[in-house]
Length: 357
Image (cartoon, rainbow, N blue to C red; front, side):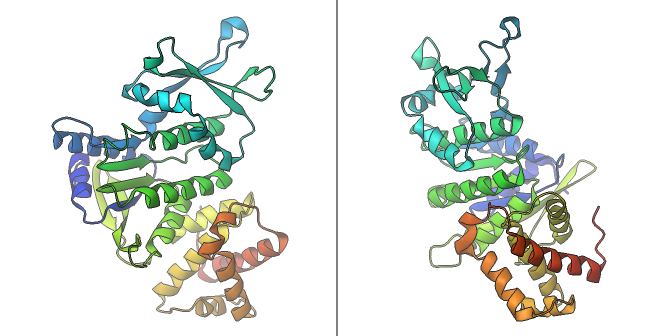
């Protein structure tokens, strides 16, 4: 067991420079990001050593509903911070934000409102649908989270910030309030950020409570075992909090001990909406259980749970979760794919009597 500060120091000492952390909500992920920031500042003459995205980043954005004027000047205010000095780059070229945002297929447009003194950066953001009138609207909480995430993804590319505070990038839970479709896109954007920066950073730390994001990102990174790939540079960690004492355990093999969390995620998706990437998670569960019983072939577990035509089903699951198809995985499953998923999932639950709460 350790304190939050001791965990931060241990993270800093890890040999791997890409660290994925899975932890339940209220474990202390945000406090850990602050502790890591403070630790690295203390070892850098009190100056910021890296850049961050966490709950404090999101708190810089606050709605002004303009209630006194019937919402006539509805806008999302940007609170003053040390980041304002870098806003000018985004004002000059808001395409930096737009290109990040477009992958989420937003149903709104936006305008960056500058302070009277340009050096003070962005004062607020106005959102609208009608480009002619640009009448202000209030976007949903999920849309707001997406916009703020894209805002910071753009800032990570701004000269003078991420290239000066260049020791590390730390991202804590970028997926709260997002639906499953957008969680997958966010996972992909994190992968692109890692691949663009891992050779230039001492550490890139991603923490999340979302088992799907953790599982897919871990699978993507760990499977890159090519020369110069990121597989051997990646460390996956489970963070736990017991009565205020923290501990973390590395998942040193490809068998991740969180299949019950995955099964719960898949059950919820089965009840609501299945996307193609849920086949990736189903394959992950099958591989975990397969490794536990000592087999390397998916056919073994499929046969044990009573799937008919095992070779065909294994081939279809492999094809639908192949890494070259990941960019399409956020789309909804077809009826044929849903039938395949449901058949395998239901037989898996029935065979092993998993209790999913």
